[in-house]
Image (tube, rainbow, N blue to C red):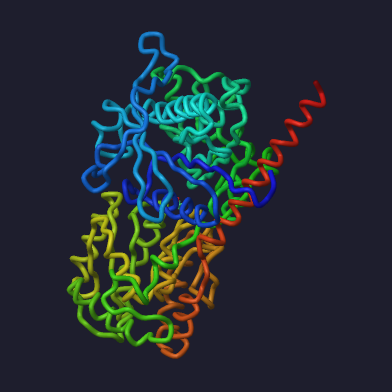
Length: 507
Ligand code: GLC
């Protein structure tokens, strides 16, 4: 395929902002396809049609009714689905796989005991639909049916698609040409269960046939492992993480497998949308500003202090946390150091985010002990993070591991300086002393040291301003990342073509 030729790319995932968001994945699924579309490619995305998706807000058109999705189960050989579609202005067309029992009746994305069946249906549904599309294109080349060159799968819930394509569909005339890229957003989740706590008999080596989607064995497949084995290309969401996962410390039990396939393993850092996240124009920010008008930022700081019922004083540094409160984000370290920081320093802590109940309880306790220094909002909120980034001085990100992390990039864009552990995407995006403060070991003393360094530096307002504007001037645009994905797609298509040529020579 010539380099200039636009590609047809289909993303498949379990989240897509704004229809459905749980974490960073949903946001990546919104921005990356958009950036690829702007580069001239024909991009689409498919997710399930969950009950929570607001049909009044996003009216959908049905484009396929009564799609028969094979289950490989004798008692219920097919599940019937519809495919619906909606398009947001400026975004690629989204497809929604509809099924009453498995998606519509469930409000949420995750957390049901039959999730394996739900993801089995998504993956088999997508392939059944593509097969139909290919056939309708064969009947009528002018049909609007979409068949991609590349399927970009995301995380374990979509990890069996490459497996199906390389095994049962490898000679299927309608599907055999499809090329797969598998993106790891989080290696820690590999299946419906935690493969590290499975007994030897149930361990999935990834090579056996895929059983019927209702079977117990299906629920025990390690889809992450299978995706790594069968995808044409595997990539993850930062360069550093793509190297870390080759080690036992970060490899979550698949480091040896990743070592074996490392020639097809890549790292591409996520980005942020510079039009959307722009403190100069963002309507969600009280007082707009850029790096030339940092004084306005102080007005936002005061606004934030009153929003959280804290003493309004521009001199007191505000440390923020605005993400899901969970172990991955380093909450255990925060729990060890925060009361000492609050005792020793005149500092305020602003916390926003839902998450693990044990950490929420801890935050409430901290608030009771330091009511004049701590402000809480323990619910996920769409606009609050932007208020926080535009008014807080520092953001705390001591992650245990971090495939990419979006919050540091968003916060930096608004001049909120990261105090971060130099791990994964955080290491790739935060430069110690220039655009933040980093520490290496996952250890509370190391975190304590980094916070103290930041608080001391804050006292020198001239230097601090330089740091803030350095942060704001960083370029993590999606366009850069999308260009790297584009390169990867061309590379894998070339590879596939070479393989096919080699095959025809053999015949
Ligand atoms: C996951 C990772 C996070 C990454 C996001 C999007 O949530 O934990 O680091 O930024 O996916 O790729």
